[in-house]
Image 1 (cartoon, helix red, strand yellow):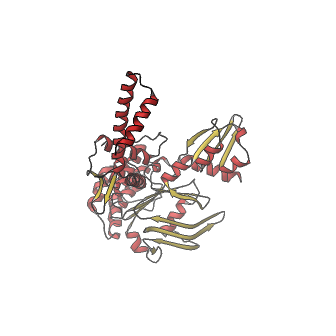
Image 2: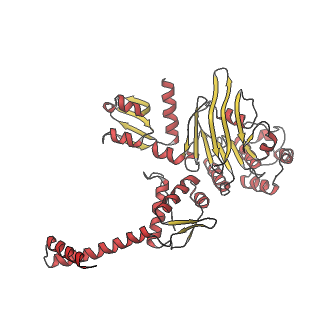
Image 3: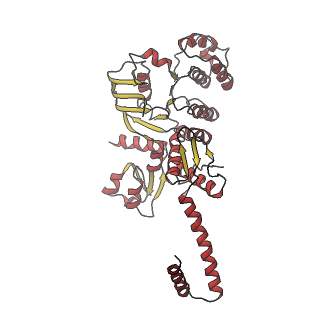
Length: 288
Length: 125
């Protein structure tokens, strides 16, 4: 399988934080959701991929090419949605577009007009006076208007209402009709990803917790609730993020069949959503 | 063909799709040889991931309900052995229940029916 992104032994540290991604390969033609709590290293990873900050060591390849040596060619093929203002804040959207469009060899003005209308982006006010949602929409319109093969989005749905979030998901699944396109999408609104993402990469404290296909995750991770007396050394080893309270316990497990076998009918087993997985994992790690 | 996915169902999404396509084939809503939507197209329509749809198609293909012809698409199988077997089993069950009903009306015991069946099974080549 072709990979659109390959990361090996990537390290970036600041005082008090180290990002250390041993290996992360994203297959071409799929949507990968990038999740993790705030401060996990999602934005840092994305900035490193875009070569907006310097890595300490390691390698990043996009489209099979080194992301620093081939930065120019790679950026031409990436649609980047980023919620911090890297635009010229004091200009209006039309001017910004006129400045940015010539950088792309495959700029598609018709597509841009289409998205501006569709997203109802006001073109008159200065960029800094747009609402957060409008800024994101504008950034998205630019990203979708130069025939990019790899769309990278850092928290694109933050600051957007549910109606537009749904619209965005529709646009993304529309893009996936073309099996040469790939999407990396970071978010902490995990409900956005649960259905359309093919793979989920979960990072926490600068490390990859898992990178698996979404179906597998949703079918194997469970939330278990039951009486405290069922907790013993053996059952505890299957659980993470155990919370014991006066009336019972709740915990997460990634081993549905094993848990079913060891527990009796007093327990409730629910499928864990991405949000549950994030919560219980963070709880487990903060315990240590 | 209708496919509706329940988020709250304990069955995984790919299984829900499999089951609904199987039902459509058994009921004749999908005819043998009929072209199915592409994996990516179905994923988009249902707003689910490509991998989920792929898994559903793989399972249907493994069970002989559908066939993929390279470059042309995915079709409902023409020679669906498993399905035919299932349908015929259904037919046999129906005939047997007729016999049981008839037997009960005539007060024929189950063991007598068994003996009749054993005899006939041996006789018929």
